[in-house]
Length: 308
Image 1 (cartoon, rainbow, N blue to C red):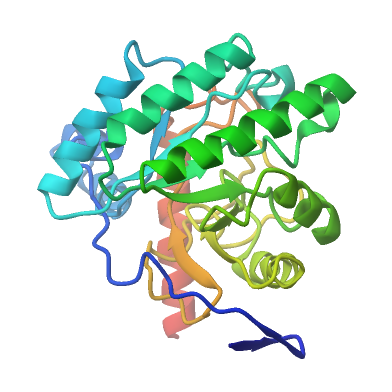
Image 2: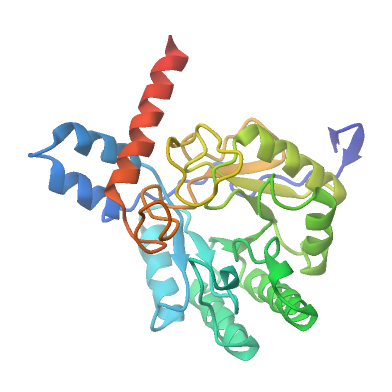
């Protein structure tokens, strides 16, 4: 049992504890660092700071054969002795038609995609972070659309768990929806069957705020664990989510968080990828060297300040 906020909660073990995380040797950050090694060695070093960290692998409708792609990725990552970390990002009406618009064409297409994704796991251990922003951002949908989204995500939790995945359902971040609202939505998608929920994916809110929010949501869910995306929250923007300037890389990915409810700090969003065509950025998900350098340089400055 765990005492949180004056209440004793059920305390399962951290399923990710002790797992090795995978560093992609062919990441965009690595390729860019190598291309700048001779001409701009200092910038190359800053990009290596990103390239040397494990980052989640995003999967969506862009894969021609999602089952085959997941199978190949799991084989590569587990072959390296590491735990695959995926982001399933293909819900119909994704991102409410904004910068990351897209997703499956309808409910049947999504159910089929999720089953193909799950089959690619072939009961091998992997983390699946389920549909960033889909629950927190579903207010843009009408009542029928919200009902379908809940049903699709509930189905996805059950299908992925049947293949033995560690499933974390996305719950937005600390500055979006009230904890009670997120807990209610998580219950509707069968969070009881999942391993926990994720916070701050592709966002910039600091760890302190997200952990406090996560602990409140967890208490409402009987002690569910959560993970936090720390890829770009080193300075903790309080409001701007689309390519805010002056931000920094956050703490490195780890499953040793020092908090019994936080299973991992992960880099879920790839630092250096654009949030969209705002503030001069390229399309969402595209590599942007300038912002990658800015994030890494600010993190280096922050580390030196802390040491002093």
